[in-house]
Length: 227
Image 1 (cartoon, rainbow, N blue to C red):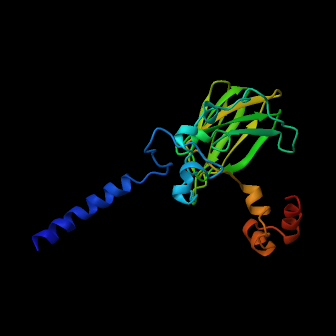
Image 2 (cartoon, helix red, strand yellow):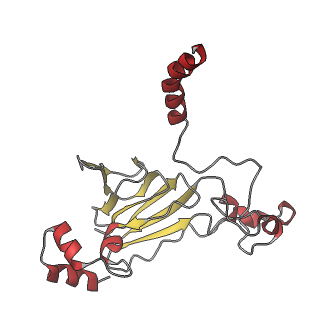
Image 3 (tube, rainbow, N blue to C red):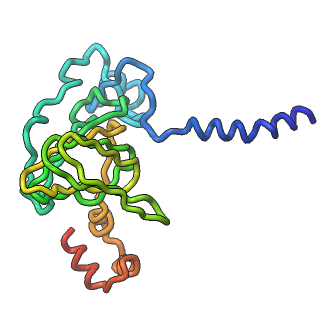
């Protein structure tokens, strides 16, 4: 009986401890590096080419400096699109050496009044630094508050977008703007709200979207046709 009482007393503490040890981040590496082996060679054969929350590791003997390098981030992205923005990613897809390290980055270029439309990263918190120009940025808290937390940023300013929250950026100047963002995942992912809702394959039923947005089905169809 005494042991049972001890367990009952310790249960809340253990639950709190395990809760506090649960973090939304990529797992810690257990070796110096694990360069992504996109060809499923090297150590991949030992794992039967199974991805363990990332890519299988290249044989360390085959690793080169280029596995940890990326060139061209100084080049502006092409903002000649309806959004007036361009994102140049530097994730594990561009630098295989990022595999298992839990970080990545992007360069974002904005034409005057260009936007990065509302989106979220399912696997990463983002920290953005303005390199040139002025940006209006913000994120929205989850239900039920849906509070917009926004700010005007100038060159050198930094802003954080918490993981999983919808956020956006807009160039509010008459000149091009540039920002650099760091992300807490090798593969942060991105879900652009408009694309997810109106560009799903197959389409979400117009009845569902009409009720969700409280608009006529014809309006929903017109938007879906754009995606």
